[in-house]
Structure formats: C-alpha cells, structure tokens
Image 1 (cartoon, protein in one colour):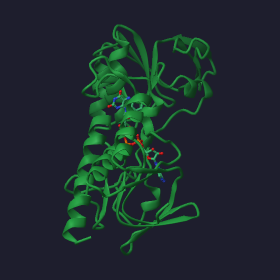
Image 2 (cartoon, protein in one colour; image 1 turned 30 degrees about the vertical axis):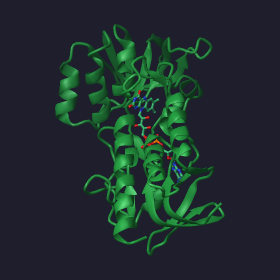
Image 3 (cartoon, protein in one colour; image 1 turned 90 degrees about the vertical axis):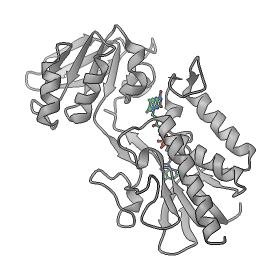
Length: 310
Ligand SMILES: Cc1cc2nc3c(=O)[nH]c(=O)nc-3n(C[C@H](O)[C@H](O)[C@H](O)COP(=O)(O)OP(=O)(O)OC[C@H]3O[C@@H](n4cnc5c(N)ncnc54)[C@H](O)[C@@H]3O)c2cc1C
C-alpha cells in the first residue's frame, strides 16, 4: 500500500465514508483507516428510519456497507487497523497505524464518539434490540410502551423528557440520590407526570437475551440491598459519550469532555487537519449530520490542496 497520500481519513463510520466518497470523486484516492469498529456506531444498530432516501428504513449495517461500496467504487481504499499516533507538527503529517507509517498532506479525523455503557453482558447483547444510547434515533420504536432511562446528568434528563413523547411512562434510574443535572432540567423532569425517579438503584441484568428483546431489568437498591425485577420495553443510556480523540490531547483544541473543537464547521487549528462527525459534535450526533460534516471536511481538503498547488 502506498505510503504517501493526499488525504487520510481516520475512521469508517458515516462521516468517514462520506469524506472518503467525496475525496474519491475528486480523484484524491483517499485512504481510510477503519479503526477497531469498522462501520462505526451504525454497524451496532438495527433499523434506521431517519436517514433520508429510505422510505421503509434500512438496517444500520446495510446502510454503512452501502456507503463503503459507494466510496470504493470511486477509488477510496480501506485499511484495517487503528491509528495509534499522529505527528501534526509538519506536513506531510505522519499517521502511525501500529508499525505502518503513512505520510499525508491532509488528515480528516472522523473517529466518532463511543457511548458509555453499563458494561453488562446482557446489555451488550441487546443493543439495537431495546437497549439504546440514542433517544432521538430509537424513541419512536417504543410508542405506547413503558421504558427506562439510566443516568443523573443533563443528558439523561433531556432523554427522559424527550421520550415522554412516545412512552406512556419513563422510569429514570440513578445510582445516587443526588444529581449532576442542572436544577432547571431536574425540576422539569421531576414535574413531568410521566417520569418516575428510582434513586440509589443500579441495573444488574437486562432481560431477555434469549428472546432478543428487552422485557425487564433486574435492579438493586444500593442502600437497602433489595433486588427486584422491573418490567420494561427498553433501556436508554444517558450517561454520556467518550470522544475518540485522546491522542490529540495537547495537539488540537478540545472542550472539557474531550470533544475536538472546530471552527467554521470542520477546521481544526492545524491547517490541513479537519474533524467531522461525532468526534466534534456533542449536540446532534446523528448519521445524517455526521455524513454532512464528512462532506464539508472533504470539500475543505480539496480546497486546501488546490490552494497549496498540491
Ligand atoms: C445503537 C445506536 C443506534 C443509532 N441509531 C441511529 C439512527 O437510527 N439514526 C441516526 O441518525 N443516528 C443513529 N445513531 C447515531 C449515529 O450512529 C452516529 O451519530 C454516527 O455513527 C456518527 O458517525 P461518525 O462517523 O462520526 O462516528 P462513528 O460511527 O462513531 O464511527 C467512528 C469510526 O472511527 C473509528 N475510529 C475510532 N478511533 C480510531 C482510531 N484511533 N483510528 C482509526 N479509526 C478510529 C471507529 O472504528 C469507527 O469506524 C445511533 C447510534 C447508536 C450507538
């Protein structure tokens, strides 16, 4: 594989594939480093109903595979592996993928953000089957049902309030009896008649892995040690996301939670280095917005190379 590139894309989620498609169609022969999770977050889900162009919806893995095929058709190349470090101090930049070193004139960081999960095997087995980290994406599937939200910060309150549009009842489960959420969000959730709070409580198991659907949760009260089963149709995690950007600490600007800071949509502070998708977007976190910013990053790469005469 060629070690000198015009553009390297770090990540193969929807932002990375879209950046690859656009740069490939501009004849820049992008190299996409796939990362530990080829296809990104969409490869973990089932039905996606809000990506335009698919009136009946489309399975997440199929959507992402289509994006990859489309980019490959125009000459994008894919490399299995994980970017382990980068040197952005001079161009061409150096991108290390384990022992390989790739030199590139531009870099598109599309490494996404990973949802924080509880880490229970039953939870992991039911992601996309009633366990979700995205209320906007999956809330609609639970219209008329009772569901659970986990967390105690603003994002959990926001998810719980949003989900009352669909669910008949939302039980908000938090392991403590005090909350990180702002007073205004907490008050809103407390005052909502469809939201019930369960504090000092943790989830020990998600039922029912055999049926491949969420039917209930095994809960434990940390103060009384009482254990019981709560029937529910879904469990939404609202305990935050971890942006995959740690290696850029000290090199690129980040906010307090580690999201890459961009200006004018996709520019980082290093000319020739762009960031797109969930790694720089803590607000929308959708497939379509990730793809949109992947497109923007690709167009900026084209402009940059043209301006530099490269
Ligand atoms: C269960 C679930 C269901 C969802 N459902 C929907 C939905 O219905 N509709 C919707 O619009 N959105 C949905 N989303 C959100 C959507 O999937 C994300 O917003 C979108 O995938 C973000 O795309 P991305 O390309 O920015 O990042 P990601 O999809 O997170 O992809 C990041 C990529 O970067 C790679 N990577 C990370 N670190 C490195 C590294 N060091 N080197 C190389 N590569 C690296 C990973 O391997 C991965 O390929 C859902 C998310 C989840 C988790």
